[in-house]
Image 1 (cartoon, rainbow, N blue to C red):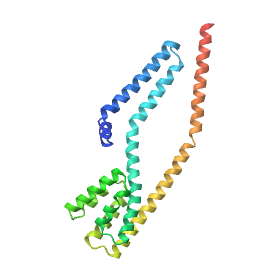
Image 2 (image 1 turned 180 degrees about the horizontal axis):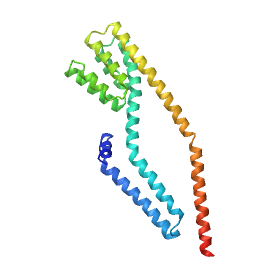
Image 3 (image 1 turned 180 degrees about the vertical axis):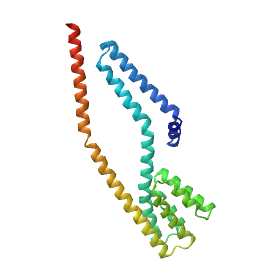
Image 4 (image 1 turned 120 degrees about the horizontal axis):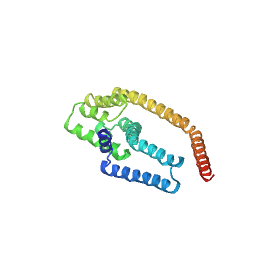
Length: 222
């Protein structure tokens, strides 16, 4: 549970509010179960709120990891988009520092915050450290290679050879990211193809439970 709370804070969420929402939803499921018991007594229909609560609890506590993974993936895709503009500015003769400043309008708030931290780090530390720290926020090791090539342009001069090195590394990263994104979209489409089967299964289960409930009522009457 401590890990969950830490993940909530990392995502900028208030653990107290999240747990309050979870508690209220839990009470709602309990209330639904009590209502079913009062009006229908013990029966198969009581399984519905129990199963629904189990699914809700599982989704509630696992979604934080999913949100974090999605943010990391989004940052990776944004890195490709933003540094495409960076490459254009560098080719047009901008210095590395000025090119990094120029791409900020194309960034999301989170990416812009990281970019400003990079620029502040460059102001204070002329070594490779700010570039490495910036790359740590991304899951793909290729981002570090690209940022090291950017540092080389600062440290050893912004000549054509270093621009070509950056373009080569960045092009490889871009191609890999696009291939991964396409594969993930296809995987999601394959997953969605199972939804109609899952819906049919749930409908059959509901129908079976309803029939069993009706038969139980008839047996009580007889």
